Amino acid sequence: MPFIVFNLVFMLLFSTVLFAQDYEIKLDSLNAGGWFGGDDRTGHQRNVAIAQSVFIEEPITIDSFSFFFTSIFDSVNGTGGGHEVILKLHFRDSTGTILQTFSNVVTDTFTGGWITWSNINYNILTSGEYIFSAYLEGGYDSIQVHSSLGCDANAGYPNGEMYIKEVTNYTEAEAWGDWSRHPWDSNFWLKGSLITADFNDKPISTSQYFLEQNYPNPFNPTTNFGFRIPALPALSADRPAGRANVEFVSLKIYDALGREVAVVIEKALAPGEYNFPFSISHLPLSSGVYFYQMKAGNYSETKKLILMK
Image (cartoon, rainbow, N blue to C red; front, side):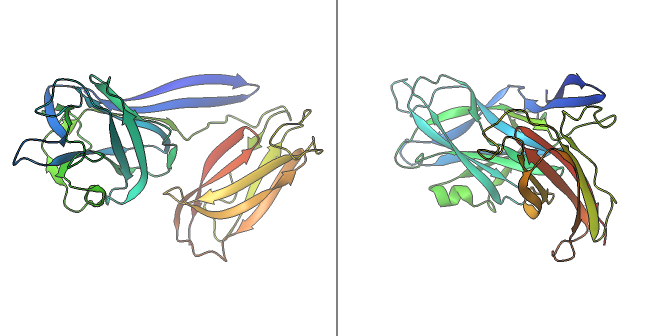
């Protein structure tokens, strides 16, 4: 059965409560298998690629994505031994446009289980459907081996679809328009972390970073960004040499797809309370939800702002 898990870790710092939350969507109901990869039988030459759409409900950072395979990678006329293969993963938006591409080398000792593409590190800042497609590199001609994709024939994931496509090369695997829906769902596992933080009040100690909610919010065309830089007693790799009591700070604005649209500040600052007015009058931005993120040393925080023209 599919499930979404939020693991909450509470850390009390003075009057501030921080929430570190893991985000997970997993379908591991295994009752069927689908062909994945190449085919060395005469008259059956093919390379079957697979895809699964997933609905993401919260702003998250995607850490990894996995498909489940039930067997070794071997040819139909093989000896029963595994083969080393390279699996490509395309991460797409709801239209099928590729956002990122990843490779995973699967060794010849693989006998079945989760194959995971790690270090995706992609920020999803608006809810919606996203697609993960995978294919066997060279499966049509140079390495005609296959495995069995773990599936749920009862289509137990209600918020997405499984797709398949027979491809002959990389270009065909990239193109999205002619993928076919399949009545099953694949076994998949998405892991990430929520982009969120909840503050009951400002920290009562000046030894903590703090990013305020912008004001006014909603805004047009000017808003203010306030934050605190704490005292920094020791030199770190994030501060310029010889300037132990300053911190390099960046505060940037992103659209709902995670694209940078503006830089509010990017400079070294001494400890203290700051307020920066910012106008979007010179930027071609439309009304909607945006996000601003502050980074300083090891500190990073993201908040939402609304432009209303």
